[in-house]
Figure: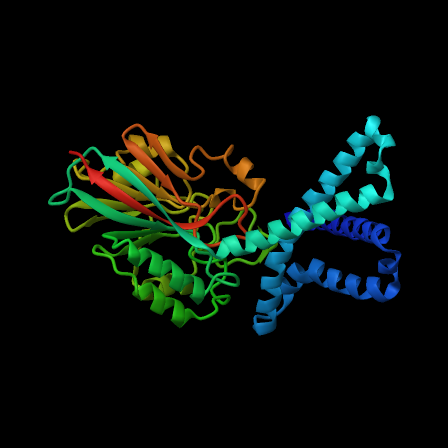
Length: 396
């Protein structure tokens, strides 16, 4: 398990941060180095460091849910604290080997000033990230399809993905999302996977969530595919415990989604109102099959009438060229979160051909959403929580 290898570095980094923080406080005011301050602060700090582990081992109850939610904020704070301290150390190292070493920058006042600025910046970034993650927006696109669709000149399609319903995302966020969807007066709603966050039991109010899903108003209904987190798995700080395995889809999760009025396509297709096709792909990483296999996109589309529009719902925006070659007109995806947190946003944009937004691939358009929910830290920095409203115009 990769987490066991990362645990020693994790603990080492958190200890180093604590030492550096106390060193900075001592420079600010020697009274802050007194035991009556350091001891209670250290106790709280240790509790935060251990919160992901506690959330993992505690039985599912209200206390465990609170601990898990605290741990999601802690992981974001840790990330930006590491960046801030790392930046301080780099600046200090650079200055030490330049003429700046003889300036006030290396004085006690200089250390206090730089440390204070980085601390304030870290706090502001974390507060912004937490608030921004709760602010669900609507992103609008227009896509042309070079086919005719019987009796339809255009269609409003709403794309949602990466809800990650569970410890962090619940009924309140669902209500906002559904309101946003209905504001678009959709003809079709597609959900591109990761409805759950690896656990059914973590849902705050299953019946309340079902009620919200049933509020969605869509002419042709709500269709979905499942993602890599729509699997019942133990997860600790973002790491699962199913290396080399192919976990089966949870029957409880599948029944819940069906009870929500959502039609899930498992490597299958449906001809909607004899007008257009919807093709739903299993997830690449966690397809939910016993042998870990999934059908190719060519297999899924080979018997379709390609004169009709073909919309593909795939959790991950992979195999875009293969999907275009298979005759798809639009590929709806999520999964990437657009990186969710800077600087991960930079990494994601160098991994995926289309990390977020719209990309033309021959006659096919790839539409990728950054998603409504969050994975891991309950923060978004450099990205946005969103649904996508796609105006599809048929030009055949």
